[in-house]
Length: 80
Image (tube, rainbow, N blue to C red; front, side, top):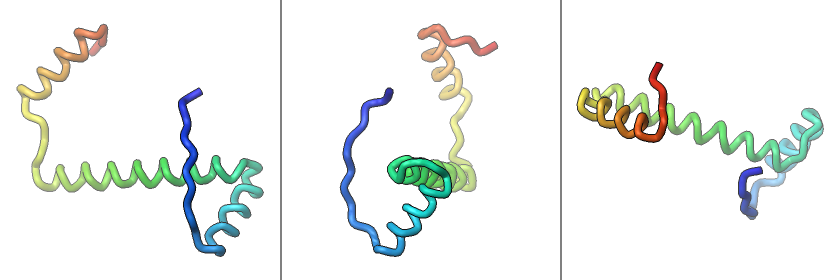
């Protein structure tokens, strides 16, 4: 199991009610629902950042890709 930390936060009452209703509907603990929501938010943020970089033509060059594969293969990676 991954190491965990305790987070404490304040949320509006309506949000807490929606959280508890969602947890009951999914038959999951509310902390699981919060974890899923945070993970989804962070993934969306990563995707948005990647799109910003793509629109700016901020891609890795051939040398960067070659170096990354070399580092990966050094640790037993198999590119196919």
